[in-house]
Length: 95
Image (cartoon, rainbow, N blue to C red; front, side, top):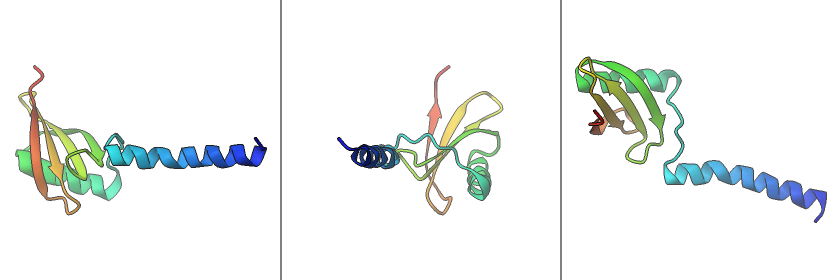
């Protein structure tokens, strides 16, 4: 196999990894910048307060997911669409 062919194959593999991750919803990419500010504000308004403890773009259930920890220790994952509108939530009942 030529050096050029090896480089082409390696490049194709590297390019395919983000596509596969995005298609499976397994990106674990945090929300950043202005989108994080908007997503956090929407999630906190929905939960009535708390602290944003995690975030993710391309969650399996929505475009954005914001994890909010409430003062009583409960965690709520708030799902948001591309307009930062709440489309769902899930309460973490682990303890």
